[in-house]
Image (cartoon, rainbow, N blue to C red; front, side):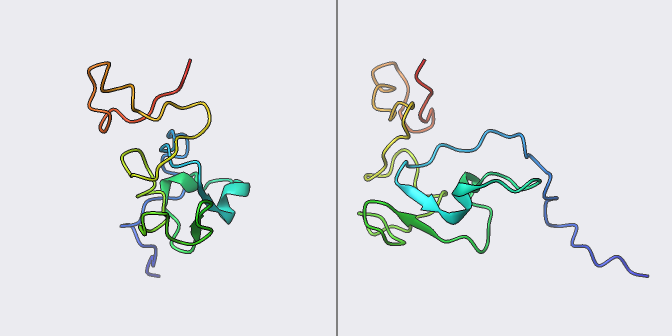
Amino acid sequence: MTDKRNDSLPAPEQDIDEEPPVVCRKLRTKMGFGALQGVRDWRFGDSSTAVYWCLSTMETAGPDDGYAHPHGCRAGRACYRAPDGYDDGSDLVALGGSGERDGPRRRG
């Protein structure tokens, strides 16, 4: 019997404990209201069926007409708003960081 499993796809259990990326607080998806066991957090943007929308526009595009998706709704985008409890990165330039690669950081 032939194994029909596709080995090129990552196992669902892969990187489950990895810290999810910080995305705009205005980004939403139905997947954000629950967690399935063995599935990575919705903020990774891995789902091929999830629909994302922006709370500012209530559409699948943000105020800048860019798609609302975890891969794009991050620090550096003009309409990005940091989640509660995170710096928006604007103070990183004053601290010697670029503000882009360093990304947002948790307020302590």
